[in-house]
Image 1: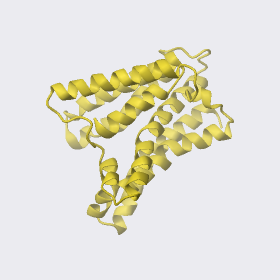
Image 2: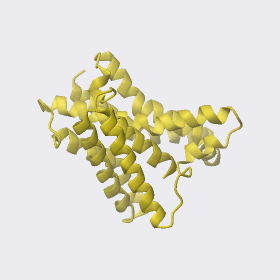
Image 3: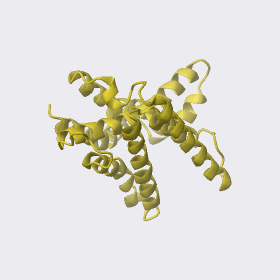
Length: 221
C-alpha cells in the first residue's frame, strides 16, 4: 500500500471509528458505565485505533525501527529536550496555581484506583496507549506523508510536518462545536506542541524525547 494511502487510512480510522464504536457501546451499555470504565474501553480504543494500525503497516512494509526514531541515535539529546519541556510545562502550571504531577487523564487515574496488582497492569497499558503510542502515530504520519510527497531528504519544515500537525489538531478543533470558541485555545496549544515534538524528532532522529514529554504531560500535567 502506498505511503499516502497508509497515512490517510491511519488518520481516518483514528478520527471516525472511536465515536462510532462508542455509539455502538452506548446502545447496550450506559454512559455512566462507559465513563467509569474508561481505563478499559478508552485505553483499548486508543491502542487499537491510534497506534496499532501504525505498527501493522510498519511491519508489513518491513520498516526499520530507526525510521520512526526508535533507536539509540540522538536519544540523549532528544530525551534531554523532552525533560526540559516537562520542567517548563510543570513550572508554568505550578506558577498558575494548578496541581502538578497528579493524574489528569481519566483512564490513567481510574487504572491507579484498581486493586493491586491489577492497577499496575492497567496503569502501564493506559500510559503506553496514551503516551508513546500516540507519538508513534504522529511520527508514522510524518514519515509516510514525507515519503508520499517525495521529500528526499525530508526537510524539518516539510509538507509532512505541516499536514501532520494540522491533522493531529483536527479532532480537538471539532470540540469547538460542543464547547464553543474557548476550545480554540486548546487547538492552538495542540498545534504548537505537535509542531515542536515533530521538530525534535526530525532534528535529533529520535522519538524518545517526544514520547517522554507527551507521556508525562498527558498523564500527570
